[in-house]
Image (cartoon, rainbow, N blue to C red):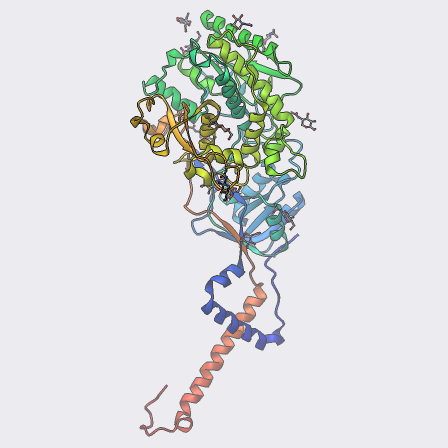
Length: 622
Ligand SMILES: *[C@@H]1O[C@H](CO)[C@@H](O)[C@H](O)[C@H]1NC(C)=O
Ligand SMILES: *[C@@H]1O[C@H](CO)[C@@H](O)[C@H](O)[C@H]1NC(C)=O
Ligand SMILES: *[C@@H]1O[C@H](CO)[C@@H](O)[C@H](O)[C@H]1NC(C)=O
Ligand SMILES: *[C@@H]1O[C@H](CO)[C@@H](O)[C@H](O)[C@H]1NC(C)=O
Ligand SMILES: *[C@@H]1O[C@H](CO)[C@@H](O)[C@H](O)[C@H]1NC(C)=O
Ligand SMILES: *[C@@H]1O[C@H](CO)[C@@H](O)[C@H](O)[C@H]1NC(C)=O
Ligand SMILES: *[C@@H]1O[C@H](CO)[C@@H](O)[C@H](O)[C@H]1NC(C)=O
Ligand SMILES: *[C@@H]1O[C@H](CO)[C@@H](O)[C@H](O)[C@H]1NC(C)=O
Ligand SMILES: *[C@@H]1O[C@H](CO)[C@@H](O)[C@H](O)[C@H]1NC(C)=O
Ligand SMILES: *[C@@H]1O[C@H](CO)[C@@H](O)[C@H](O)[C@H]1NC(C)=O
Ligand SMILES: *[C@@H]1O[C@H](CO)[C@@H](O)[C@H](O)[C@H]1NC(C)=O
Ligand SMILES: *[C@@H]1O[C@H](CO)[C@@H](O)[C@H](O)[C@H]1NC(C)=O
């Protein structure tokens, strides 16, 4: 427990020493201003702040005041410690260092109620993750932007059937008037707990969302399908789509539907034969994979029959994969939150959502900081090198590869393929390398080899964050694109210049393909890279919510979420002297001032005695 700014309390007898010290500090300040700053402030390097987000009607999240917030640090380890911050403590405002296990809606409501006494909040990660689950999302995610509403399928609207995210406490949709930081590094938490100090916060940044397991499975399925010898000649096309911003009222999928409706997308809505979506698939209890469908569209007999074909194709494909058992659900059960809902709003497509859960999510950490590699059992034996970890096939990778195999085989059949139904197989090595790259260490040899040279700094030593960026694609977006290009594309023999401008090469088609000059793997000496040209059909399309293009700022049809943040985001702590020491310093300083005034006066008065000059008396010289 630590309270109030301590520092040292000076003994009144040590005044002269103090005076000496203040001179020293002054001198040091003159010579090396920077280093004093460095000594006073300890920057907190691994923090993830929460940001202010706005939609048409609400503001959520948190924000510091423009010049930052300062307060006395108070560590809250048990609920009883809150008493001090909320009522008892004499020196508000406080910056609360909260144990991760206490970061719950209950506690936050209490803090919010006394926000005048709170200057900020730093939350340490709970280790291990809270056993009862933690999800700052709401119990009914994306409510109101899916297909069900009071006027259509009202019995399913607002999660009437059941709450998909049972543990959700809605914390992420609350509005706080003080900044909140997550301390990602245990050691930094310890630094604060030691120091008796104040905290000084600057502005804040976005949070992360993770849907990694499902897009990895999809990437592995794409690779498996691509390897089928007749993949290029199938009667129907298969398009793999990776949406971003879906948690914010389906930004990605609503944009695509909007573009399709307005003829701005190469594929029309009417051209969609079937829609297969992967929901959360990494936490399968036993072997079950549930097939969710929409009851409303199936009231139409045509659609009902199409969905039946879709489900039986999946079942046939699953029959050859012993690690996956496909299961149907009661036909009157609504869809979970999914991109398919946005397509159903526009057209009654036949579609299915595959998920590890039959009703509420199995994931206890939906959209929370604890939805990490450990949550889906991605762990590695101790003492392995990064390269060994990269290629170590985890059980999770095997399980996801099974799902990818089912998906790839089903897509193959749906696309009209027949000859290689049972030979298509997703590669667990691909899955494990993707899991490692996205969840453990992005800066690995494989990701480095598949990226453009100018993007290499996008790979940090930790997991890739899945920020929903306002302006530019995020790091993860590029990596997904280039992973897809690597897995489904082809290395072609072009020079760097030709690769960057393939229109000069008669055999290549710039409209049909995307050409990328990638870094390539290290050579045998590990001194240089072997760059190469990769041709693929992987493309990136901007997904700005249509609400902004239509200037419908109050839209209830399209997402209106925006993010507000200042340019710089950081937090730092510094030591400050106690009130007593400040008072003594002031008194001593004042004493010195009075003393010097007296001395000056005396010298001045006796100047004619002290400095004998030929001048006229009365003309004062300094
Ligand atoms: C904005 O977000 C709040 C909080 O989630 C929600 O209650 C409200 O309906 C949203 N407004 C619109 C127009 O979507
Ligand atoms: C924390 O400090 C310990 C001991 O100094 C060190 O071994 C450990 O790697 C540090 N942890 C992190 C996450 O930096
Ligand atoms: C943050 O990094 C700086 C420079 O590397 C270091 O001096 C400082 O101690 C770090 N902060 C903490 C809390 O470890
Ligand atoms: C994860 O590992 C734990 C402990 O080994 C096990 O009980 C659990 O079933 C595993 N979960 C999955 C989804 O494999
Ligand atoms: C059922 O759906 C089909 C195809 O989407 C459409 O052509 C047909 O008109 C629909 N039938 C009814 C009764 O709405
Ligand atoms: C499906 O659910 C409905 C309503 O919840 C129920 O009446 C019906 O008996 C269920 N059907 C099956 C086959 O379980
Ligand atoms: C889908 O089908 C249902 C039931 O037939 C119908 O009420 C609804 O309007 C259709 N949706 C679209 C977008 O056509
Ligand atoms: C492959 O799938 C197609 C379509 O489902 C089916 O007609 C065909 O018999 C299957 N072939 C084999 C060898 O299973
Ligand atoms: C990635 O790792 C390599 C060594 O494997 C290192 O040289 C490079 O600086 C790292 N990049 C980043 C952005 O950390
Ligand atoms: C994302 O890319 C930026 C720009 O190169 C880099 O500074 C940042 O560390 C990357 N973030 C992660 C989480 O790797
Ligand atoms: C994908 O990456 C692997 C490993 O670096 C490499 O062997 C392969 O040639 C790459 N494929 C393409 C199409 O870039
Ligand atoms: C390895 O390095 C040596 C000396 O630096 C060079 O002569 C040789 O060609 C290199 N080999 C390869 C495969 O790059």
